[in-house]
Image (tube, rainbow, N blue to C red; front, side):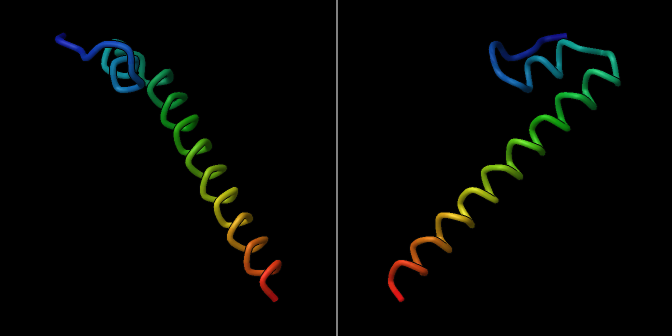
Length: 51
């Protein structure tokens, strides 16, 4: 298989193991969820400060 180097997609591509793919996808979703939550918290803090 011809895989890109050094990123998450490369890891998934290089792994034909479904369990590993599932694990990487879960990590990505968790990270995105945390980022979204953090951004939401910051927004709420800013609006609270302006009141």
